[in-house]
Amino acid sequence: MTTTTPFELLPRDLSAYRAGNTGVPYVHRFDSGRPGPHVLVNALTHGNEFCGMVAATHLLDSGVRPRIGTLTVSFANVEAYESFDASRPLESRQLVHNMNRIWSDAWLDGSEDSPELRRARALRPVVAAADHILDIHSTATDVQPFWVYPAYARNGAVALALGRPAVHLVMPQGLGSGTPLIQHGRHGDAGHHGVALVAECGGHFRRASGELATEVALDFLAHFGLIARERPAPGPQQRYELLQTWVVQTPEFRFTRPLQGFEVFADGELIATDGSTEVRAPCADCTVLMPTRRPVVGREGVYLARPVA
Image 1: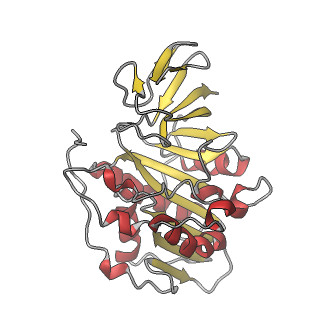
Image 2 (image 1 turned 90 degrees about the horizontal axis):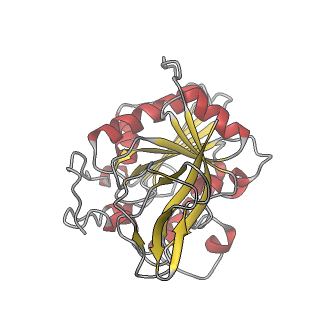
């Protein structure tokens, strides 16, 4: 599969970060020695989403340290990251499993094996230890950045307060295709105090996505008091509610027209066909997000959402 996106971001050697200081490779933890929250900034849940690598290496290379609480910086799927091939730039997203769908106890305690499952099992205590999580991602198409988070008031309050990205995809019932990292364990409980957000920072290989990821990571740390930082006042925000995640069922999955993301369909309008099954807009102003560029049976084909006040 080729891509028309220019390569403004490419992988860099991460071997200098391998040892970390926690006993888990590529995980770095810094304790201020003062009371405060434990914040995790996670990069490379998907191996070809380089913006998180830019943000994580910035935090480590520039010596960002918490004034209060604890900061953990992790690189998740480094094995997939190291498999990147510019002639097939979307292939290094994962080696076997989507690492952002396997964070349930059923997967982590199960008998299946893969590079992603082994890594998730190693990272399990890292994720569980954090009060607040920022998981940094990017998109296959070059669309406006957006937040993704479960519809808990605590998540929405922080995402709205941060203000950038200014677009929000809220998940009332989760993703519908697996358990993401930000819903692992207590982070998936309505009663938990902690905030867990995904920041989709723009196109995979855009320099601007790395720049935004860095700003978002610093904003996130400042919000919880770990660093001092002036932040711009939030501007207008747009929220979407996830209605359905369509998982590809057949090799014949096709969109009715080329899609990038954020296209709007009328109620009942045909969006795609999947073999003999029609995928139609379930509501007026149905907005499509993250349409697949390479349909694979068993993986997400498109997310259907609606704008909300």
